[in-house]
Length: 337
Image (cartoon, rainbow, N blue to C red):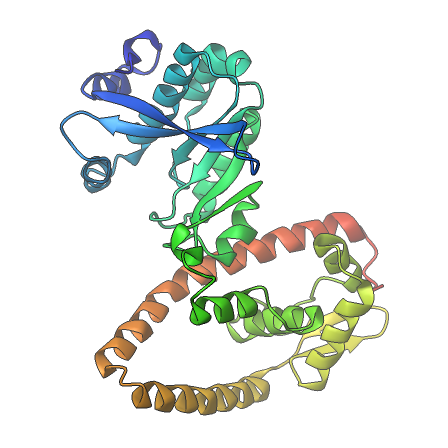
């Protein structure tokens, strides 16, 4: 069992930790050759209660922070006792981070033990809070942890999460690839997921979507070709082509010597909505032919609507990053190069 009494933490959280009976198992993660161990994943083993039940108990009490402290301190304590030297992967809630006091205690006990061998695995079943994630990212950087996205393809861990968390490691959920050699649907999914579209079309669709979702406002200056090319390591001509086609479609306009701006895109939005509704009709018709229940379609629509606010926050966060980088990159030079 983890001994939390050794840590000079705040008395309130120490009292909560004292009531927990937790041990850890360590699952080895091998290099592709199957011979050498790359890391150990710390798996919480609470006494007399399942892990998910324990998480739900603390979630209902609005106290996932205590469980976050218990997890990281406890996992590293057990790791150190076993004398491991490989990386250690620890599950973590994206919206929970150490207080300054907790960070100082952790560094005192384990900074030298871990070095740069820590990996924080972002769990897939808790919602994203942008402001709290920024605070957590600062804490992760101080502790020299790497970031991994756990069970990619399930829950909240999707491509938007990849852009926000900027992980060093992405762990695919096994459901995505199990039996993929025999599953035509999965093979087609990965073909589209890897995206056969030209890069400029992917960029164009991403910017257009953010304009349609009103993330980029009318008359707002867009990041320059140079900024986007640097951020995504893409040929500037590719960005320029995407911008050119967006301008032809009425989503953006260019002012010579000043840059590229969001147009009054109401007409373009209406045209886009009309196009998407036609596609929707075609897809729904085919789904009905394939005996898909109406109830399932309604459930999917409700889920998409519920997820929209999360994507709005996430998109806004990505745009904030791009805007900040643009300010640094371009300085006082407002020309689009």
